[in-house]
Image: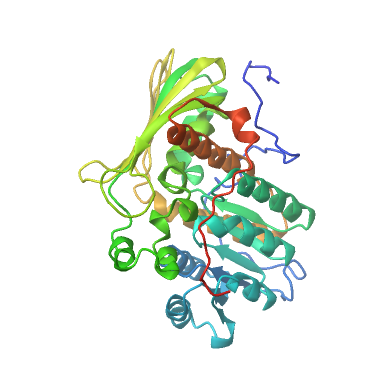
Length: 416
């Protein structure tokens, strides 16, 4: 189906989940602390804080909890992580009672049984879909890290739990920082609404960086068969992380699909692992994505070396170029010039804005779910590119939608 501009609407709706305009939703400026309305949050009274359970107490989970604490509208009341040392370090930092610190693979369920208003899910990506679904079932609002899932069934689960959240009037927000940035929002608005670069013909996206997992590898190398060491080193596990194209590179590919407002119809790719000898996660990808009307976007990523660090997306139109960089310059050059600008601290500022939006949604009871559909589309796009690269062959979106493959991290030997 095509809209009046001739662009395909394919992918705007999947399994009944409506795609809403998300420029205003997750992209609003940070909101001031709001007084909580009585009855909107389980067991809360007016002027109280949202009780928050943190699922995942590693580096990012601890950091997000700190931002929520600084926001002022949250009380960190429970913590869950497989590893006792992590949950105890976290619990001591945020004064979580010992009785509300939970460990093991089912730690998230024990946390939900202990009752919280909301959860921040910051565990390895493999667990996100199951934990989000359980949180909604338990009546908790969901703040969810990217990527939401590592495979197609996981993405379908995210859609289903988001629909259920909507039915239960629960907030469900996925934390992509770029969508909160005013320079990205305005540049992409001009491209989509004002044809600022004319008809888009081609583009390129990239995520080039060094290895983000230097601490994981030495520990895993001691005994690669130890299931607990493998879980600690989730970043170099394909099944636990989704590989770098899903776990990391999703930021660049999310902007690509945001600008084009469509999913790709097929992909062809390659890549490999050459910079380390442990783990099964690749360290570089090279993929070509085909979009409707034969718009081609080339994508490249690497996860080694030094001196080249950037998350970028450029779109080339008949009248100009959109040039975007995470925490770097964002603007338009050509027939129409938009000087744009940069948020040099987008990683932190974007999370703060999302946290403020999440708090506002929980306390007001007004939930727009605007981050869900585009995030699922981006997540699926990474899996499309990943599969094409693994197969070193053309792989279509229709093929992807028929996939029932589930990544298996082999959790045997881990405690429940």
